[in-house]
Image (cartoon, rainbow, N blue to C red; front, side, top):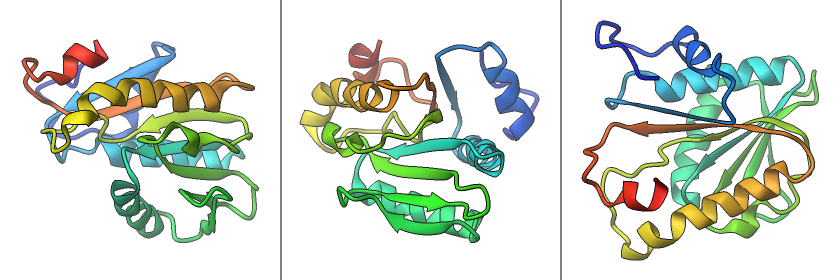
Length: 177
């Protein structure tokens, strides 16, 4: 599915329409700054409010720090707690007990110890606009799938992949398919 040209901004309804196909993996790409991440954060917040857990991922801890800052502005009532392995955070809704786990996916062992049932795995900015590290292009798919295996080993989880539109000649597509 794609974002219609006549709708300038993604909203939660657009994302839910895309998710209505009930795929295990849903990939949303569009031009930059049209609301993909905000829509996914709104969906994640709705899940947490219902008592369901969500995993929010960025490529590395630096990018994850940006996501944490955005999340704390977006949902200030969620209590921040470090994940025991020291590489991420849980943002916990104290009334429902549910949480958003924020983890980097560049090191597969980062997902160890996430033994909660997660309804969504959301990879934000999973396609870089350019590669600054040559090795990333060759390892990121395997790393991402390793993290996914850790997350879904006990419970079924659907995935949402968010990315800015890129040229299809980008070598990224060779590795991710």
